[in-house]
Length: 328
Image (cartoon, rainbow, N blue to C red; front, side, top):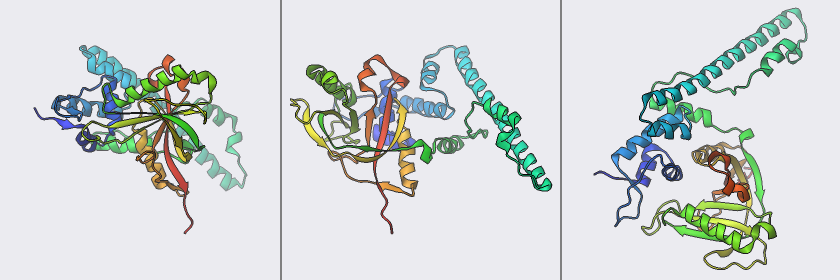
């Protein structure tokens, strides 16, 4: 049986290892763990399933719907899901057709004003304003795609961030309690989350320090000494607070970050945020590390309420450390 490691499949399909682990966590794919091998591996069936998932995601099928498609044994159920998405696409096409008509009206009326030497304010036209106000669709490219390569290109265009999509934030220096795990089942993310939750309960942190913030990051992303990848969590605490094992008291230097809010699981947004920093005219990467990592961190927003929410209701800030570019 041919097995592919998580790093190999990440490079082959251009998908982050974080996304792969999340897909496995929610049951979309399964990995195979060999007794004498610490890496996650995938058989041929899992690779094919993952390729199918990626195609469906590029067609804007939600992860919840993909799970239903995978588990469904009835073709009629799958047809209903596709019809639901098709109806949404039809609505968007209709809205875009309306936008086209309105823009053509703008052009026609502006041409008339040129010939008649009239100053025309189109934004005062009540008829056009009513038509625009009725629109709810965001402008997206809807060219008919026929190949996986075309779908990939369309996805990149759709997900490209603008300056309005990215927040520039400052994280102040702070004292933190750190939880760390490497390659342990059910995964270092869940192991460290349990460590932090026990710490919060034992110290009554929610009541004594309600302004606490919760951060997490891969440390490192690749396997460590054959034990699998590592994950570390920071929970900010009062400077004079005593921290006992298994957590460790540390100092977080903070700084300026480019931030993007995502629903839990949308890890592909890391690529879009990275591209935004690469193309920024004002900011550059700040390569100061956190505990040997590149400094990319995730802030788990409203963490006090996470136990009462799941899936898309949980929000995370992806943050890349940046600095203002030096003048040449």
